Length: 64
Length: 484
Image (tube, rainbow over all chains, first blue to last red; front, top):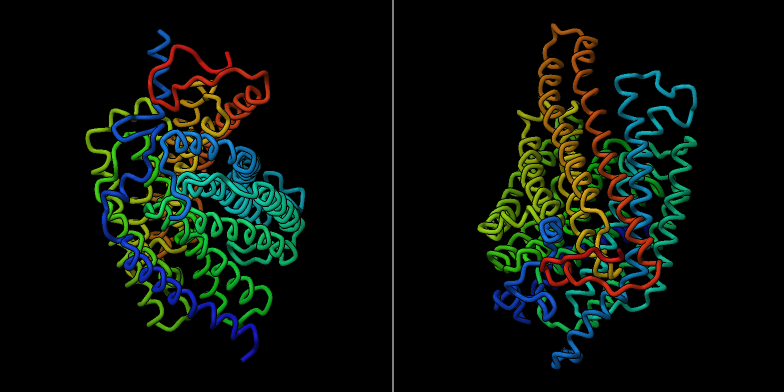
């Protein structure tokens, strides 16, 4: 097999191996548990939970 | 994590630092991406007109259909979609990892290389140097530059992920990391097997469609879904309906999508089992698609009224709906009985645009409406231009996809009827093709409105400094427009 063939074969095998390694890492590190914590990650102090953002088309009514 | 922030003041300062650190690299990718969008739109209009008026601009070699059409495709997928996707990825990674952008110069260098490589490639296509392999038409002398540029972005993304201050991952990060790792694998494999050391015979077609289908499903789709999972909760102020469902959606996409591409070769000279595996995997895609659709819908329940006031939400929700629609349409198209009718028709063109434009592009537009005011400290100057942008793109999309999907079915049925002369079939497509040009004009109007609004906003950024109005950041009403 040519070096490029070996490289492609290695690449094709590496993808599922990396995927399984990621899944194992996620399971071991609690990434697949505590969904409540995961779901709240987009929110922060400036844009917290229960605060709608980006309501800029409301400017029309605010101006009038 | 070692660098986790405990202090509240430190956290607030960090958020501002993250946004300002992203400004130059993200804007560079966005501005160049939108320049390619305008060029791609122009090329699309020329292509579309040629389909019903073949004599249009037929006097120049470089404007013949065989060159303009791949130039359009590559300008929009590698010029616009990939660059805005990278811009959104960079901002989301920094925000979710809670770290300011490191080595911004490296990202700008990557953007410069990407644009140089693409410019060389597009000139090559228009000059007649296309490889004639769909989605990989860029000549071989331009792609190493693109690959080098992409490698810089990928390495930066992984370093940023390693330096994250938040140990728990949000589902958007799973999708983004997946996209970052999948794309180089797809692109390198396809380049090697089709351009550098080409395989022979029908295997070429298999590799071609494995790549072309996966570049949509494993590059653009994860970035689009990452953005949807981030921006819908952000705008409405509520978390996603089910975090576990979202993770299931990611892993099932990772498991099934890679096998889908060969359903494009139904009826071709390929081993039947390969096609069958692809059809089965395509049907299995119902799992991630339905989990995503349920999650988005139940997250939005009770918040649809916010669509009136948020451009981000409008574009992103339309994009999410199109994701479900194009995925279900894709499942139908993969079935042998349905494929027999629609395979070589304009139905397929409508399906591709529903995916890349209706889903991905609309989500990217929505994301940019959210990101740009935050990194620039300025609000969008014109609400009217936002409306023109949305309605131009939305109506253009509907007028493009619905008639062409229907017309494609009629075209397929006519082609399968041996008593109908082929020219009659071609003439039957003309009304749909003319409607397609009109739809393209509406989309072009939307794009020009968006770029005009962005130029106006940037003119204010580089003008005399005025304190930013906080309406966008807080979501509250404001009596003034920034910069006035």
